[in-house]
Length: 301
Image (cartoon, rainbow, N blue to C red; front, side, top):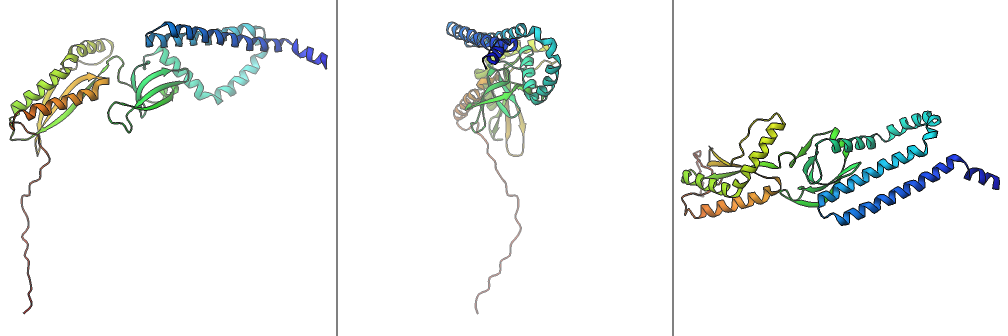
């Protein structure tokens, strides 16, 4: 009995397994120590997150090097076993492997980064973490109207980047074009209406114009896109019931809802000050004709 125990304890494979376990525990402890140390020393959130990700990646790399060093003399005899086992593991963990490949693509490519607002499939929100297997998103929308957080945290497998389109609202061009429609009655002073709308949109979004233009010029230098107008514009179209004014403007992606609220507020106040010269329209219906109806009333006697 004792000899069997001694044989197991002094077996080289057992020694390597014990060494591996102890080594991984030590590496994990060192990595955790440095992550906590740097997290308490770095105040900037983006820099802190990037440093934590770098330390975690270094920990994985160090673990891989350690395993190669421990089992280097065993690889020759284990090549066939590893090949057979690797094929089975690759089939069973194909989604995991695809997610790791997606993480590599995210690290080397420019799909999105932490802090970007993205839409992955039907999920839209801000990226708050990119792990080896999953991307964590603070969701916006759903039962909450507008681009506001709803409180749900969604984790999406990184393999998603190879399967469907990735929409980035804040990548190279952190602005979006937005548009609102204002119905004005035909009897209104239409020149005054245009002046009111142009003044309101310029006061609220004019500051974005120059910054957006410079950013768009960088887009032109990087991608095959044409020049686009980032200056606020007001256009009109006449329909059956009213004159519809469309206001198109560029706004920072995270301020889309608040800007629209401020814009409507300014327009309502300005129209109210015109004392009826400009008035909003609503759906109206005109009865152009009705068939004649003959009614016969029979009375007793």
